[in-house]
Length: 75
Length: 243
Figure: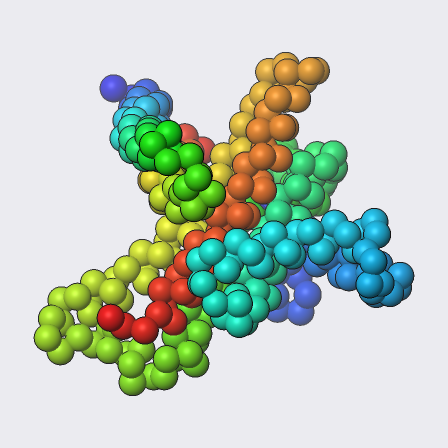
């Protein structure tokens, strides 16, 4: 396969696979948070900020994958 | 369509290069200083109105949010300038980057035989150098706050743990990973957003980019918030008494 074709596959697969696991992680985080808010509605304020922080950590991994995909495609 | 990962150099001041992101960051600083000057000019009133009201609302919300993390008003006030400055700088830079003119007004140059447009202004945080600088400032201030608050002996026990040296080493590696994580999170979000807007605008220039601009506004403020609140969390962890 020529380099261009390989690069295209690499970029596409990087972001496709690299976005899958963080999406799963964020889903699990938010689900647990929703569950505990549902069980105890008054704790919503206390749960929001730590949940957001945890989601940011998980999303960062997806962003790493995106940056690698962009580097493969454009550099 | 030409998308450059690195910020393009425009001119030199002496031996130092000036990139389009540096120029844009000066505009961010001018905007923030203009905000301060505008408040100073009107004077701080006991009953806030208009701009002072908005600024007080933002500051109060942040201070209460920080109290939720530190559980100590004095600590919050001490961390406040660092955390909220990071937030204001990042959100101003991100939102300025959405204005018309950023990325579109520039110089026509020939690079590697192709005609490319070198923009005069480029979103500040789409330059890895900027986000790396902010991340370094955050992590260095984590160490400084740790040393100032609990003393250098107690703070170095975090990294030089005699009972379990691996934990100390891991803490050091964790700090380095934090630098990478902070810088790439902000860079990735802003750069990817820029690329997305360029591509969508090159496909359908009318109406369709609108929801993507709203997305970028949202991402801009969320990433600023995340950067600031994560810095705060690390400040807090560094200044916690070891249990």
